[in-house]
Image (cartoon, rainbow, N blue to C red):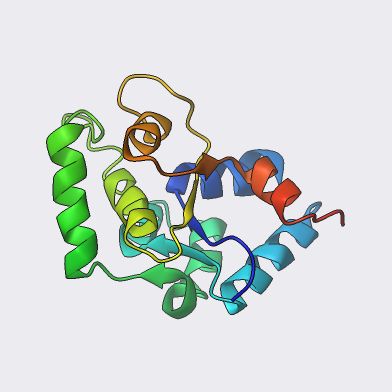
Length: 155
């Protein structure tokens, strides 16, 4: 398996689908995601799937078609890393608003994989956001535009 391997967050999928890389005009991006999925290089935690299921929109339909190939169930190594992440970064998940519940699983999936995955997120550093935790855990991260550039997709 050549090339980088990615663990994508809900925010990146939502941002790409609804805001920046809408499938109607940027089909090559979604075709590229499908190619990466087929190569085993584009994955996400099942917790992202569960978050997206709440909206039940066209993006979720796209995800549902890829549930068996893109979304990874939580295993013991991932769960152990989630516990470590939450111990060190308890504010990563907003338990009051019920948001960001998949974030530690996206990071843990990246950390528990060999080679270590890049986390793909549209979050920016702040107080206990994905980039902050990735920096603290020495995990590389990027946005969707960065992924497109790394993969050299032009159209």
